[in-house]
Length: 193
Image (tube, rainbow, N blue to C red):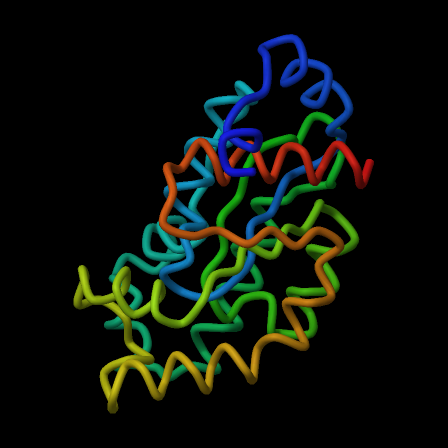
């Protein structure tokens, strides 16, 4: 099954790419691979890739952990919503791109409504064990600073699943090369469009 999912021909990718008429938006938990898979997906589709967290840091002139520490999560979510609205633009063909969002972005009612209206939301999902292994590589996750990462990630995954499940496309990733997950996303988009 994984080998089958690992390959699409260039003409198949081109056919799918031509059908995409608005931004592709990757949503899901921190550590699921939205940025790394998003970069690969954008490369395959010859579309620009944008990381919402990087754009938020650029707009705020400070790193996200510092925004959380200085101003709190509600302030961060408000700024995140405004930046994402700018990034998705009108949601038209001219705004096509692959956009990765922060883990909590799609849980905000306003941000979620905007993304569902202007983009094609894709819930990138994986198990908690994979998340723990991946987030352990970096020390820049504000929501993991206050306790046991396994417990926090399990709770967040459970709390956020009802929001993420509103994305029309759901793809499960795992310990596989990024192009395999990107190809799964392309196949799911092709079926959904």
